[in-house]
Image (cartoon, rainbow, N blue to C red; front, side, top):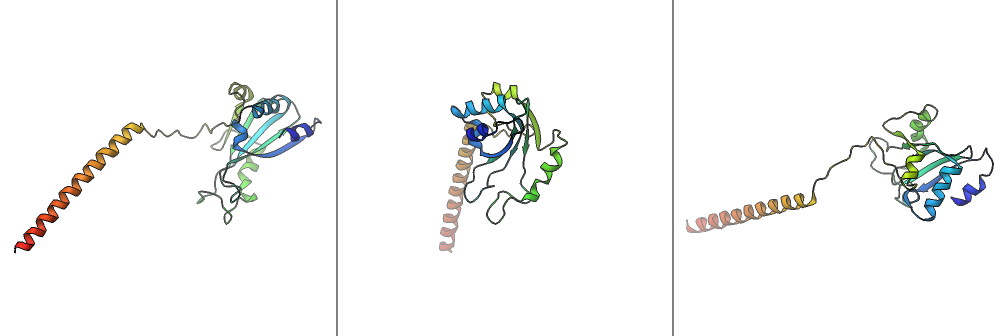
Length: 182
């Protein structure tokens, strides 16, 4: 990433780079690179690709970062690429195809917030220590409950199951005893 940024010397320079999720939230040198990316470049768009795009080589989720040398970043548009209907993952037999980018192409010149697209300010990213791993704000957070409560409920179910097994076993023994007596 540092080399690509270095090579974009002119005001007309632009790039699209595919990077793994780890770059988005990594610390240390990655934070310095992301700070420079936002301050010296216009990181205008990130397309968040789902896991499995590069299967079987890796299952890591990846992103396409679009940036240029037109000035510093004010806002970053995020577009979350959805799986096609019926897909739960990509694979060698079900690869990502260029036709699947029709939604992004239609949105590109007429940007607005949608179920797949949202905008985050560079100031917000800077306040997050340049963490670019911005979750989709339209996703509904799922409350999985308290693990202790789940464990207690599980233990109660196990106790009821054991009681039912014991009762069934006793009924079977009783039935076998009665059948031998007749």
